[in-house]
Amino acid sequence: MNVVIVGSGIAGLTAALHAHEAGHRVRIVTKGALGDGSTGFAQGGVAGVYGPRDSAQRHAIDTVNAGAGLSDAAAVDVLVHEGSTRIAELIARGVAFDRSPDGELMLGREAAHSHARIVHAGGDATGAAISQALVAAVRRTTIEVVEHAFLVDLLVRGGAVHGIRMLIDGQVSDAEADAVILATGGAGHLYSHTTNPVGTTGDGIAAALRAGAAVADMEFVQFHPTILASEPAFLVSEAVRGEGATLIDDEGRRFAFDSHPDGELAPRDVVSRAIARQAARQGSPVRLDATMLGGDRLASRFPTIDRVTRERGYDWSREPIPVTPAAHYLMGGIATDLDGRTSLARLFAVGETARTGVHGANRLASNSLLEGAVFGARVAAALDSPSLRYEFASPQSVSSDTDPHRNEDASRFTRAALQQLMWEQVGLLRTDDGLGHALGIVRAWRAAASEPVTVAEHEDANLLLLAETTASAALTRTVSVGAHHIETSELERV
Image 1 (tube, one colour):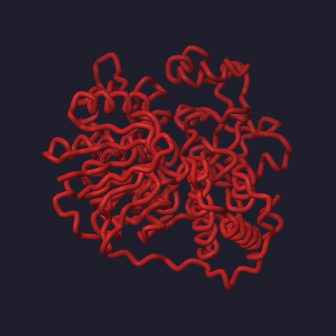
Image 2: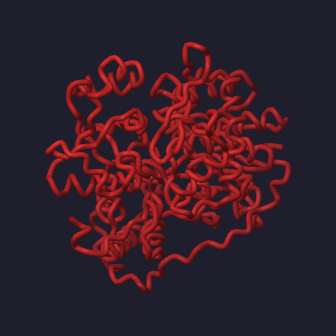
Image 3: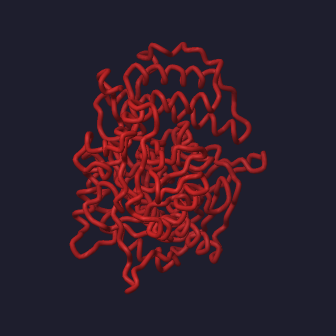
């Protein structure tokens, strides 16, 4: 079978290797160089290795609790029971996870986990270690790799996907395929503050939407609580708080306990909102205090963070550092079944591009790399039946007839303006009026947009489509849950 995989993070590379090993003819198409994307930037680890007092059931409970009860039970069951096998596979492919002097895997703990069950590589360079190992594994095979190729659209005939349309060096090129797997990551650059690398513009999700595939849960956007409050954005891993670092206000008080009994180790959405509100109250960033860990431990456990903070002028072993939330992960995406099938025949999706249902309304820390590995293997195993599709009923979006702002001025579109609009109105703290205002402006911008030609113009078109989809989904879900939070009083907005 001829298979085209779009994307080269952990999900796409895992799917490619498994499909190749099953005898399929595989072509990887990637927007940048092989291995570019969010995986290589992941500081957190991979959950799923169980200590003597832990179990898959406990991991499942933590996942569902973090997801505000909206996680799909069957998907969570797959994740937690197949996770250890996939971690062992990563080790076999060359990922050197951190080990204690006696050779045992070192297990860390992050927010909302009830046990230490997370493996890391290079302290805070897990994603880079995984990406390098998988890229090397692909390079050792006959898998074809097409780099610097932008996904324009899916080729659809007779209700089934038959390939992709690409833009390479300004030229349009079509690639026919018996099956297409989208693994293009999320859409972090919908927002003015994001941990995502440049180019994370939701291209796969947008192409699937235009082709008629079902999407779901686009309102659930996770904001990482602790990004160093200086440009460019730099993530300070949740594992730092897992090791004992605290969040303090400008008077040195640990304010996170005001919002949740678990304080700094509460689910990410809770901690992010607590930080945003406290920063607004005091008119300055809150601070992350890791001084109690000591310089030697910080340097050995978090070498990348230690280096970057010092390059930015902070000695975090001696002083708390300023942090702020930023858009981090999309829980929604292309709706799939447990094997990555979408509502379009011969189209699969995996990783952050897909909405498997695992994450519910809020992703549990260190479940994203695990999801890519687990479902990447499953989607490859399902390729022998690409004609089957996932029967998914898409939730209704808000119609333009209900939008009082649909005639907003569309003359001022820039990507930066869109990102700021999304940050302010469709971000951490939302209101019905703000969502409606944002939706109207985005629809006006889309209506006035010309046909895209360049890669940047295609990216803008994709971001506008996903902005409309996200704002519409947020308006449709009228109750706050997980990462989707509607402010209902002036007190909340302070």
